Amino acid sequence: MPTSTQSRFLDYSSAYSIAEKHGTPCYVYDASALDANAAAVKAFPNAYGLTARYAMKACPSGAILRRFLAAGLDIDASSGYEVRRALAAGYAPVQVSLSTQELPDNFAALCEQGVLLNACSLNQLERYGAAFEGGEIGLRFNPGAGSGGNNRTNVGGLASSFGIWHEWLPQVQAMVERFKLKVVRIHTHIGSGSDPAVWQKISSMSLDLVRAFPEAHTLNLGGGYKVARMPDDQGTDLQTCGAPVAEKFREFAAETGREIHLEIEPGTFLLANAGAVLARVQDLSSTGPEGYEFLKLNTGMTELLRPSLYGAQHPVTLLQAEPSIGSVPYVIAGHCCESGDILSPAPGDPELLAPRELPRAQIGDLCVIDGTGAYCAAMSTKHYNSYPEAAEILLETDGSTRLIRRRQDPERLWADEIAE
Ligand SMILES: *Cc1c(COP(=O)(O)O)cnc(C)c1O
Image 1: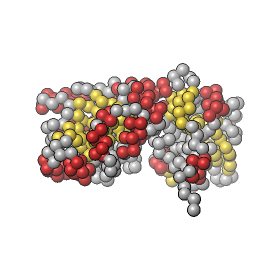
Image 2 (image 1 turned 120 degrees about the vertical axis):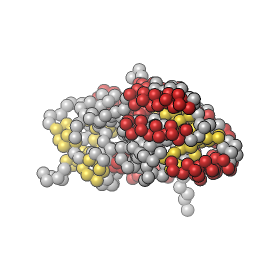
Image 3 (image 1 turned 90 degrees about the vertical axis):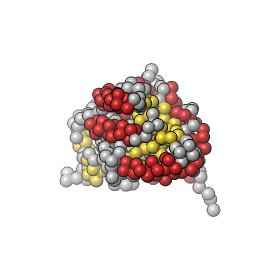
Image 4 (image 1 turned 135 degrees about the vertical axis):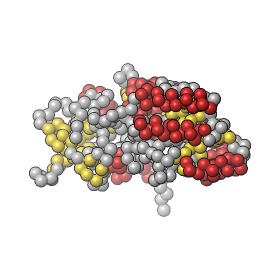
């Protein structure tokens, strides 16, 4: 396993002062990286205009939402609750596009406010049609192929329930006619961590869907741009990835006279490498010469679930006051009473251990887990073992730090319980 000797944006001195001021474990977000990533997304190649959305499920903290609002990004929401959270952060309803697995009961009220809905199933389309006869709607399709880092993040193809299966076009057309709907947006999102070649192929297939709906003016190609978390990973260059797609839009316009507006909605690309978990080594143990050396952190699946869930790889860097002599292949263990709480699984296989060679650690050493900005604070086994939610800190562009979410008061864990 390649090991990193340097964390992405924290060094011993900045990590030490954050730990002193705010405690550990905590999430730290790098404002400079957030701004640079937002600028890269806004510069995505396009032929006839671009709306860049932030897929807020990646990290829905208010400070992040407000920063991207100021940067000119709109929102992709995955649930009715995410819509509420985006509106609470200051987005206008028309800036929010909702593509959800579960249509909220109040979807009609949200649409009346101006939220844009992409129907993600025939049932959702029917419910929208019944509420808004003659209305404008977007349709999320499953274009028949998918791409993702693994089968848990792949959301296209036969085994995926996301979107309307592309072969149900006749049923869609019948329902559109029945309710006199105008299909103005086509949406496809095929998975997270997708291969750019597959992404480009799906873009062409998606334009074929646009062809089937003469009133569609916008094609949303989702997110899924792969980022390089580990030193050997290959990230996506948005310019390279998007240029051939802009060309396809031009060809489509030449052929049909229709200039299609592009939407993209990355989550991972904007956040993954802009966030880190700062933790401490709280114990060291060993199962002897035939066994393993364990490095136990005061974090784990309560702050980052991806390694246990997918065998996801995150760089782990020890920050020591005095560099130690020698290195040790450590199994990096989380603090939950759960043998699956491991931060050093084999790539793509959470069942297997892949020890990491790290400097010999001391209890109390600081430890940075990089690449944890996306789907970590947002997606974890928070509250397992009754650990309170970790604090979130923003590292400002001038190097100062700001607490954006305080560490949860443990009493909040049982605050909603009802005593007998
Ligand atoms: C999750 C999601 C995204 C963002 O995916 P990333 O891999 O984080 O870029 C975009 N669109 C939809 C509909 C999603 O569900």
